[in-house]
Image (cartoon, rainbow, N blue to C red):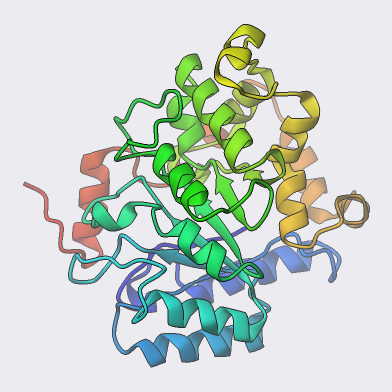
Length: 329
């Protein structure tokens, strides 16, 4: 799944939609035409310019590009002010348009407030509201509402930040596990995997309240290098049975890990994993991957290198060089 970041216009994006399409074209040249190895999100920024222009862009992209899902960043705004999905002036029109177009999955950045984001609108408090109002739509909560620096523990409905806010929103609105809300782990798992207690609480809470069938793997590897260390950590992670019993968490089984690693996303995006695996087996992408793995095992440093800025100063420099409002001090 190839996603994007928000900006006032496509020309200001680190990865604009035309580049995303060209990337998909390259992948399609290396795989069978119907393999669908790469699928695209289309970013919608309803608070950047006229709303109708954004809705028209949704229409055009859905008709021309077979968009897999919409990506929204509610903490983002060109003026520094974000929005909420249940906002009748901004959020609801986007949901209604997605519903009309038949692309009924909306992926929302929640938590993880980046530079210049509106921290208040990074809250997932609106997820339960729209999930209840639109039971035929799917809402994927990117980062699961996790906030850096917030210590995750046992579910506390009084929490003002983090995964607990997402859970409370679901409970307050009667949204049951394994229905139309999904929790994505990109950046979240990488940040907590070295703290087994927090990792167990986050996974335990998400599996219990969002559902084992609705927790989705994610790595944000474009920012942090190869996802392999995250994959290895998740494969080997175990939840202590006594800990799980104490907090009412289900065991993290091998089958549950397989669901989180990919089977849940496959179901969400309508992918038959058995059929698709047969289609891509031994295609050109697979051949190139095998050729790379045949190289000397000690010469893979670049495979683990981050492809973008990985420090605060690096991010600030990138924004300054690309027309952003953040300047280096």
